[in-house]
Length: 375
Figure 1 (cartoon, rainbow, N blue to C red):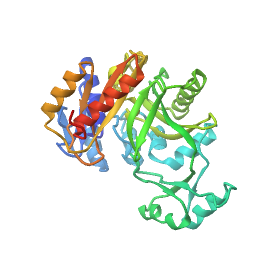
Figure 2: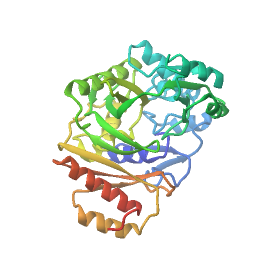
Figure 3: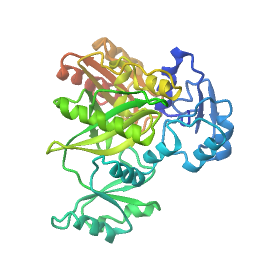
């Protein structure tokens, strides 16, 4: 696996029961996955020679991020290395402009969008909405953004200059009037077997995922099915192998629009570790190795994943004592990461029959582990 973050850490954990030998390319020995994987190569994923040396002896190479240059991946494929989800598929998670163009061609509903050249072109894009000056609009760098980075909401041409300083193309999108954000997670194997998890609601705070509720409360069976079918169609159209997360807007008039794609395990699927028969991590491992996929059905009526974000941390042993004694069913997953304000350093999963109770238990545990509450 290329990338040493928490996604690699949890994917490695899922492979242990199957006896999968796991080799990791990590930036530093302190990275989340590098702390627990036995075979770690420290190197720069942007260096083709490093990638080639790392790939020797690997049956399959997969990723916990989308940032490996596409030309390097094509070189590895030419060397005979199995790259999964596949170079051409991964390009649609690496480049938002390419993704929007391909999904639109496939008839998948997306926000109104186009690549813009400069702030004046942003103003022209906004005006094309036909209502006033058309602002606000959303600007995104086509590559490199995550967790709210590389995304700007601009309310006038005077605010539109900053995104162009990144030196990469800028995508303009309409500001969608959405009721909430959803995510449809699916997994697809090389020979086309696919499974779909329940559609979840994803609640963001300051551009970072805070809470995921599975299944999405109040979502009609029809709209849930539409979201799953959309995600399965995208996986098949793009030839995805492994886990695919399709982040969606549910509009106030009852439509679904694709926001982002991720071709790896995803924060919106962390609930599956404890809330599904087969987790997203286990199914990603199965898919990239072309093993039969596992059952994605939920184990309980409700599962809630609550992220633990960087804060003023208490003594963790004492925090564990409190949280585990208060809620014996609580599942805590910490990543071994350095604490920085707003950074995802862990998550907790709670589950049960009563959604309000499940949410409260998750919120309390995450806040206590963060140190923002003390009782």
